[in-house]
Amino acid sequence: MAREFGRSARVASQIQKDLALILQRSFKDPRLGFVTVNEVIVSRDLAVAKIYVTVLNADQQSIRKNIAILNEAAPFLRKEVATRMKMRHIPEMRFYYDDSIDTGMRVEALLQELHHEQPPEQDED
View 1: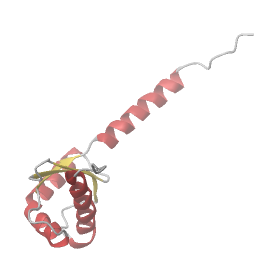
View 2 (view 1 turned 90 degrees about the vertical axis):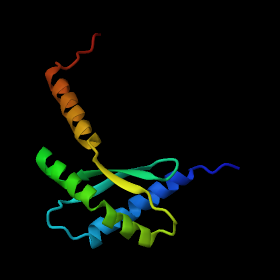
View 3 (view 1 turned 180 degrees about the horizontal axis):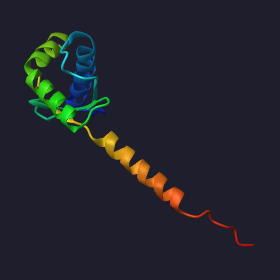
C-alpha cells in the first residue's frame, strides 16, 4: 500500500517545522527581520531543499538583504536542523522570497477597484 505522502514531502514538512523554530528561538542575527517559513520543497533525491520565506514589513532592498543573510547562514541552519532530525543526510538549503502573498494582495486590490467602478445592477421586472 502506497503512502499518502512521499518521503520528500515528510522531510520537507519536518524541515519547515524545525527551521521555523530555529529562526524564532535560536538564530540571533540583528540584521535579520521577522522571517516566516512558508513552504519547503525537497528534491526527490533529498539533496536540495528550496525554502520559501516572507519578510514582514520589508521593501525590495530589505527583502534581498534578508534572503542573502539566510543563504549566507544556510550551513549553520542546516547543522541546527541536522541536530533535530534523525537523518544521515540533510538537504542543502536554498532560500527564496515567496511573493505569493504580495501577488494575492495585488489581485485583491484590483478586484476591489473593479467592484467600486461598476455601477450597481438593477433588477428588471
